[in-house]
Image 1 (cartoon, one colour):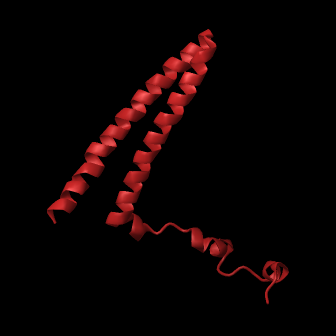
Image 2: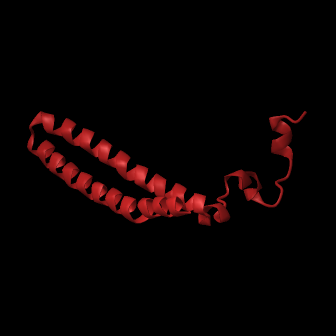
Image 3: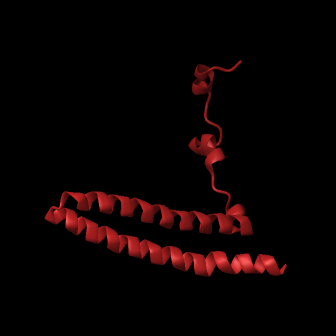
Length: 105
């Protein structure tokens, strides 16, 4: 049975990156249809989660009624609108056309 000491004393196979092979990015998967959809869905979820976080933080900041808190609220609302526009564009250009193409096949 191999212990941690045995693994530490062994020489590295094929350079120092041999232990990181499980973390390599599969470029063929990312270029496939499932990979593109996964990337699009993750980008859309990033926008939605940013909208929720900025809304909560903005409304929490404005409760103190300080000048800086009101500025933070306005900045947060501007960021929410930017992320909402980004989510809308991702939805219209990436998610909806693929859904209609799948229905036609």
